[in-house]
Amino acid sequence: MSIRITRVYTRAGDAGETQLVGGQRVPKDSLRIQAYGTVDELNAVLGLARTANREAPGPEEARAEVETALKRIQNELFNLGSDLATRAADRHPQQPRIEPRHVKRLEEDLDRLNAGLPMLKSFVLPGGGWVSAFLHQARTVCRRAERLVVQLAREEEISEPDLPYLNRLSDYLFVLGRWAARQRGEDEPLWEAETT
Image (cartoon, rainbow, N blue to C red; front, top):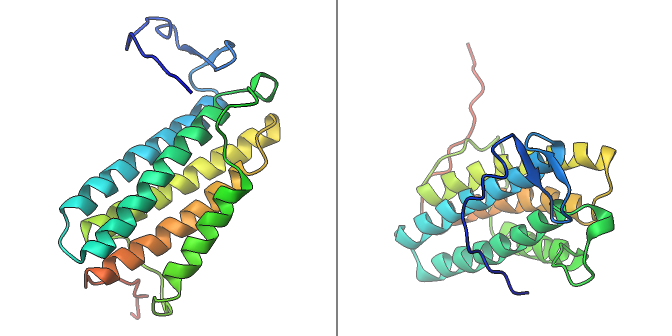
């Protein structure tokens, strides 16, 4: 798939509308735009996590695991964003999309990483090291994207694997955040209920 970007600004959106992949003009605050815009925001947070991961101390194997996984997921999120930016009737047969195999890969990776983690006895407070903190932030943005896609699916047709992918991805980011902190010997802050 060849893409050429020759201009960054077009002025076409100055009146509060934007164009979907099929050419339709829609308001910039439409549910479809909010959904794929939030997927884009999630991708940006994963970029922060990747940057923090490259600079964080700890075992090289852990750094490589996080880097490889997040790079793959960032590319998958571009495919998801492209699909969400396209109405069902305008999808091209060769257009990259999320497929059931992507969901299965997340499940396999999630199970593998989670197998080595201690059982939780309380809720995890986002934090620990930078990598873990950014992954927890990404998890919350992923959940927001999922909520918006749920709303969109009530109004318009979406690809079937999109919702399971976002649901599984938020779980995966939670586990990856825990795993990354453990690999680096960082504390995992846990919620403590008030006792007074």
